[in-house]
Image (cartoon, rainbow, N blue to C red):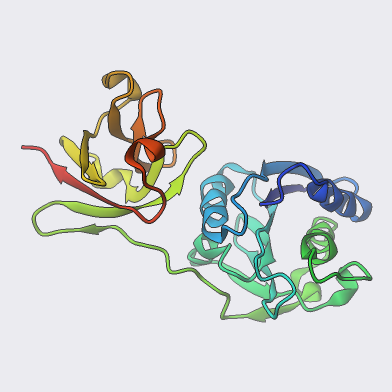
Length: 257
């Protein structure tokens, strides 16, 4: 049994996700389908890439990640398969697999073999007509070489990198806002592993603490979240609304004397 984990911006109102599952199960009836998220913001490829990067390490080896956030559907963008030592990824070649492609063992194929698609391909629903069938054929044991050809130029997003300044300060950026409004940065936990730190964002400061319980109700705080990165939160509140910021906002941390 092979796991196929689905990530889309389709929502659950219109039946699009269910249709993709129907296609998959028609080809690979023994596949185990897991919904990772269908609430990615519409056309937000960066958000989808981040969600995949956080989630994929927690799935069993051999999982197929079917990710469809596809603002370029119907254009000349390529259908893509990416394979790493642990997992396989199917979706559009638009940067959605940027974090995965940064791994040294990642290999990419463009999916150019229509016999593994549905017979009729629409210009608006490649999730149903191309990506779901390919994921199903992979789960059924079809080798990547039969699905397409190797490429060496898949699209990668320009992902922001944190930096350390000579004075000891750290500058990072908010790369994701979760359901609770927590502002998740690209500053890794090991950069702030020792000593006390203070955080500044949008002209406001907050201490870096170990847990929400260390600050008062409705107070802002920085902490290392479950993603292994520094994030800004408001205890029992919404940091994104409190600070009136979202992804792309700059964050600064400095060591406290």
